[in-house]
Image 1 (spheres, rainbow, N blue to C red):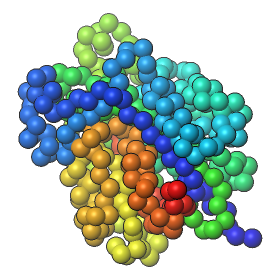
Image 2: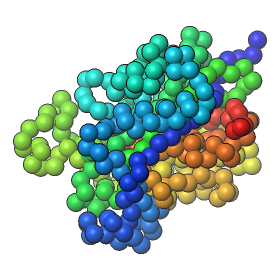
Image 3: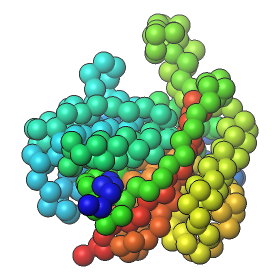
Length: 332
């Protein structure tokens, strides 16, 4: 009997309609289109303007897109895993609400938080559940409403982030396709360089924390950039070496869309041709947990059965890693 692997069998995605362009940001903070584009590669990002809608709305939309395109019966989904940094609320897991709303009435669900690496870590988790043999259909969603935690007077962060969601369905495979290998890492040194200070058990919400803007994302951009460039490239190169993959063997790089220069540095270390590096950062900015699945959704039409995909990500904490996956289907 062939070894059981976990393959992606369907994808979906969703971004809000409202476009926040660099030109609009020029009217909000002291910045300009050339500066943003040169340093990040971002031209615009999508924002969920409705204050009555949270991350669950984005996640539901992405899941519904996957369900509609694939024809999967939601009642047959065994598990819903939501990778997110911006859950709807504390305590009540957002994934549980999402599962109920999409009709996954027989699934159990929970949230997974590893900042921008959440979806990558979620891939490992989803694959492990499938490979255990106990679960047949695991729905992994990456979704974030980053606009809810961004200070739009802080030009260091407001130019970077956007809102969006993407989803991938993992199922058993006996053809040797799907997730092949992973290198996942973390280092608590990152706690000081990319964080939201208030709102947790260490510093509960108060009038003072709100007045101080401690519920917004703060980052030391130069330090985060330095760690991201070296670590994302390191793990991507390592997973290629571990699996005897040369640059000609890799069909596509699916890299976290935080900064174009970080993506280029990772591709350079892997010695990949530019045509193999998938980019949509110019349209969406950094959607955190949603960047990897949005790439899958946007470029699904390019993937061929058997293609070698290398995923790479870096996030707050610090968290980072790389996954090697063989694509399992041709889009119909």
